[in-house]
Length: 480
Ligand code: UDP
Image 1 (tube, helix red, strand yellow):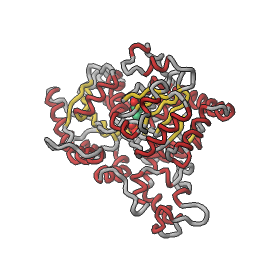
Image 2 (spheres, rainbow, N blue to C red):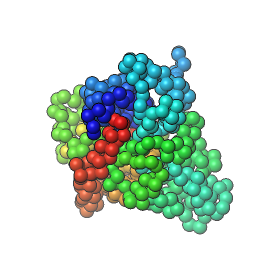
Image 3 (cartoon, rainbow, N blue to C red):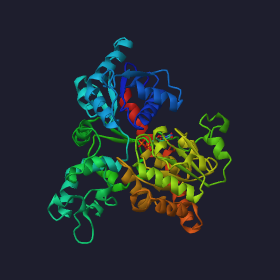
Image 4 (tube, helix red, strand yellow):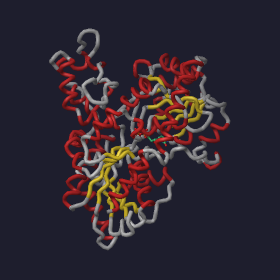
């Protein structure tokens, strides 16, 4: 980069405040800010999400990156009924909230013009906003790359599903043709997605192809997802929270053909290779000291991420299976879900397990005591497990979870999905036995696959990996 590169450059970073989305974006902005000390970064996010970031990341921000608060769209005195309503209110107000946030950031910097908008890709209005102020637009796509592909091909998916149903969509969910229900057929017609099945698509796409199947998300959000394929090709570059080396050549080439540029900068939530675990006594959650007392590869760690919710009877079935199998467990469980546990479970399992509202997950999964991760298959979680060398029992719940679960079980072979796709006491006991039990052959095979895949990730994260080069390209793009 030239000496003057970066001077007068101001990047507005627009966060999507729900789920795990803000972390990778903040990490990317931090890495860029450290590498380009003359560029100013203004990170715009809701107050609640900024607080969560500060409480959970502990990262020291570079001097040229500042957090700003934007409105969450919730009218004063109103409490959103559920996450979809919170999302709807946020998105309705978002273009105006971010515009005001950018004005605030400019005012504070002596009217330093915004030269680039780096937004979460779900904030599709970033495209028009950047065009209006003659700035670059660089969206970050946080979920899995195959999920992006599915959004691009939703019309073709719709069409092929109709064909799979024998020309009529009226078959819907239960319309079996021949031996196979259409929902269980592979997405052979979609480049790079032939390993996936219709049933692995995110609820927002399934909603389009299955009459009467309504996703729980907000209508504005559903519209934004449908606009991805129209707006992303206008971006100066689309940044992926992934390593290119992990994706098939067909998927990579196909996505590449759709954008002006696509940059794979690696898993932004993870440091690869992982640094040594911090001293256990410094872990205020008590998870690491508790794990220190357990036998190697004996513990089941359980977490379903930041937004996914299981039906109450599945919480109960999972708890019953844990208790019956006597497997030591560490469960990251939000306080309000404890009500779904069987009567007396907490008292009876006091010695067997530990329940916390929040765990330092990446460290937990790198602890030698953890033998299995029972997961919803969030993209970040899957790779934290992989890098920790821990096989998974998958119970995908939302968004790209089903596709990730398909990759984990069928392609990477580093985990199993629960029998029937939902937790039952019997199915879960069987899965625990499979992953933690005495079937050495199966367990050894999964461990070998994890080791090979981890090697690939470590190499991809190294100086010769594509991520290092793509990060440099991104740095040049935002600095000039
Ligand atoms: N996480 C954590 N502690 C917890 C629960 C979750 O640190 O107790 C982190 C986890 O490490 C992961 C993120 O939350 O990085 C969840 O992201 P993911 O993409 O897996 O799922 P999402 O929350 O987006 O569904």
